[in-house]
Image 1 (cartoon, chains in turn green, yellow):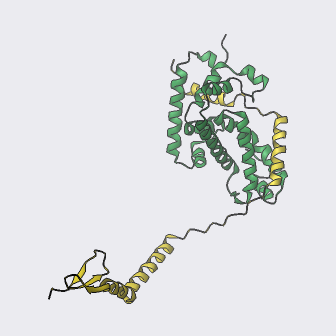
Image 2: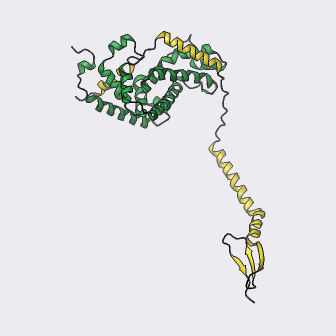
Length: 197
Length: 118
């Protein structure tokens, strides 16, 4: 995120949060909520859960303000918290064994879609999302951070605290899995680019 | 058909980026909740992290510990003396049924000293 000169930096806002300035927390919320929420939705495929995760992230900024290293950018810290909270949720869900129907149901009619987006939302996009959701957690997180958040492999490695080679390998296998899954769908490049017919 | 890499990338990006809008009203509701909860929670104190000692400092520390151990081994006889005494000490002595003197030694193998028969 580009911060203009008039806007306080993340470090300045964290300093103010340390002094219990909730307006500063509000500024960070305005700045990063959407990014955190979108990542959480993409990982969990559940908008209600993603809202809770995003909320928890900002409460953690407040609670741990004194322990956040302001010499480093805030956004990797936020992504790390998002991934960890999402992992906890996914692990808990696995234990509950959510039915496949429930997952597909959520994918077909997500509550977070605006009417415009519902109109745009093609069947193929749903299938891509479904395929992404079927990836294992580690591969899905790398895909989300890379394709949705636009982070480099090095940045992802830093967030996940693992070697760049591991991130590269997870991304490679994720793409291969997605390719295999999506190749079975009969589609044409015209449909892909949305100008069929 | 085989998907080209760029096509696949475009599809993944499009699928992830579509539909994740946050209505302004919902966002402000969430902020209200965060604001309320943050007002109730306490900010944790900073954690002081001890600086890691350098390699040279660690080598010096290990050297000092080794020297102290060798010194204790060579000059301090108390440990040796204690071990020697306990090794040869016995807790019971007395005649056996056949009239021989038996000394039960404090050793892990349970050997006893038995005098020759008279």
